[in-house]
Amino acid sequence: MSCTIVVGAQWGDEGKGKIVDSLAAAADVVARWQGGPNAGHSVIHQGETLVLHLVPSGILNPGCRCLIGNGVVVDLARLRDEVAMLEARGIPAREQLGVSATAHLILPYHRAVEACAESGPGAIGTTGRGIGFAYRDKIARTGLRVADLFDRAGFVERADRTLHRLRLEFPEAAQALASMSGAGLHDELAPLAEWLRPLVCDASAELYDAAKRGRRLLLEGAQGTLLDVDHGTYPFVTSSNASAAGATAGVGIGPTLVDEVVGVTKAYTTRVGHGPFPTEMPSDEAARLREAGEEYGATTGRPRRCGWLDLPALRFAVRVNGLTQLVVTKLDVLDGFDEIVVAERYTLDGRDVAGFPATSGELERVQPVWRKFPGWKCATTAARRWAELPAAAREYLEWVEREAGVPITRVSVGAGREAEVSRT
Ligand code: IMP
Image (cartoon, rainbow, N blue to C red; front, side, top):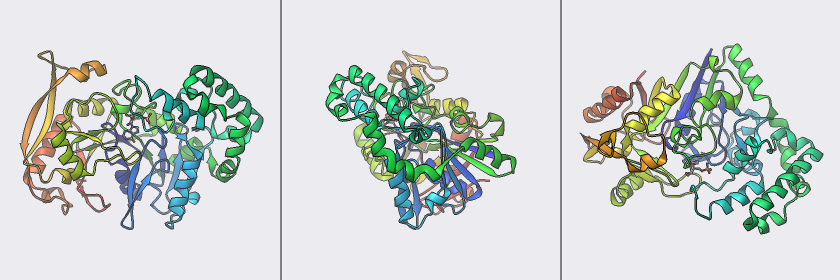
């Protein structure tokens, strides 16, 4: 039995897509457990970068079954377009893909009210994909799920009830909501539902059976620990459990099946959207890192905020996820820097902070205590073995793993699948 969780250890965009694509070479099934088309997982196929928003990143591995779990929120039109994009490149995505019957749907009214909520005070800086409002309906027990597409009367009645409620709650969205009706939405979705019908599955049962037959499972997270709705920098978070605890609930298996939890962290830190970011760099330094690392959102194209590695945040991710391994990505982006800087710990009002602050307010006020490492000032992209990394890079990484208390098992040194140092 083997089941590995791959989870983001920061604010998302850690390079999970590349790592899952690589680990999937030794997996039989890859399943996404949360998030939706807010995610943008980049994988390289025959020299071309493909960005996956909903389809699991194992899809490039021939024969790898890819499941969208019950914890994911699905935008059907985007899913169809993504599958078409893959098929146009000769990847038989429809044959490999299964979508849980109990995954929730993102509907046009979710996007309309999110646009409204994000235009005023209290904006989070979301990806604008209707994620938060789809999850809100799920928790309020007013959501519509994949299986509901095939019960027109029930779908229409419940969508109309939700529309009625949203019109009262969001008068500013009246215009956008006016043209929507349960029947109209169902008519619009009917061709997509027929397209989806053969893909609908019981992902939980499939994973359980696969595990019992000794198949290797990979559970792929989206976003990252610090965007987790329970453990992240609330309220500047996404609306799902992006940390490892969400994995089993989001695909419908028990935690006893899991044996490894791999945390993915960049060699530095980025964040998109609003919220605290203790190690954020001043804008000129951030611009340099942004250009070197091509740090622009894979989903929205927004420039990412950039900063140094944050050890208190990484230790927190180790604890919350129960990490058993760390993968460090984008080491090569630091190749040209004279000095590599890390936040070793925080102080608040002149006192050391133990652990990770519970509120975004405190996190806004903490002062990082910096530690500096000499840069290695040479290209790491060709390294494939630990010993081939420059001594200064090894010193930096070995310090990080000691402080984090978890072994670094892989280091990514470029965009391509082969650009990786494996330590095992
Ligand atoms: P939402 O998930 O679109 O509701 O956005 C909530 C917050 O999570 C915003 O700060 C987004 O920028 C951030 N976010 C959502 N998805 C991703 C991602 O895949 N990578 C990085 N940040 C993300």
